Amino acid sequence: MSPTPRRSFLRTAAAGATATLLAGRRAWGQAPASAGAVDPALIDDLVAANRILADQGVVDGYGHVSVRHPGDPQRYLMSRSLAPELVTAADVMEYDLDSNAVDARGRTSYLERFIHGEIYRARPDVKAIVHDHSPSVIPFGVSTAPLRPLYHMSAFLGGGVPVFDIKTAAGGPTDMLVRTAALGHALAQTLGARPVALMRGHGCVVVGPSLPIVVFRSVYTEVNARLQAQAMALGGPVTYLDDDEAQRAGGSVGGTIERPWQLWRKKALAR
Ligand code: MN
Image (cartoon, rainbow, N blue to C red; front, side, top):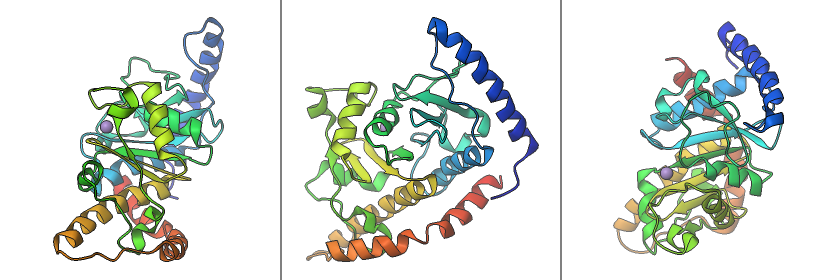
């Protein structure tokens, strides 16, 4: 872990004071109480995750990443509505699982924050979530070609990648955005126990037990989709990892994620 700047410590202390004030306000029901300050290193990880996903072409001006609050499973942390590459520690907000902001202070929230709240509610094992429109995955959400693990780096895709169709979930046409808790819940149901679900005509959601793992999975979901389209374009049958290979490779590669994470994090926080 890199040294923590003093200003992050002060910010956390201020957040603690804010939490106390909010706990008092909760009595007359304006905002959920804060679950308290978190380790500034986790906030730095969340900032780094935003920038890494932009660096790797997973997000652009759109997309978001969140982490579950380490002190309270009923809370999560995510930037205010902002392009991920611009996110700093001061932009991180706390939400309850209904995706109400604890301390909005006039800041705007992402319209699709319900993706995060409803998946955290449905999946106690999930500690971090990415929603993105990563371009190479889009064809696999709108065609009959299933996204499948082509190589060892994306072995986590073994076992299948479900596709969420918002028209089916909503019972009719929508603006394609997961802008309500009901739609977030439906997406969480489609995701089930899987690490990735595609969203037809929109993008995908990727989940994991930590920020490094969810970033890794998001990056290699995009790379796998690009490589798979290339392999399919060559013509003839494509050989994918079989279930046994995916299981074995997932275990091996899964133990090495700190290596790219430390590289990506250092570059992301250096600017
Ligand atoms: Mn979206």
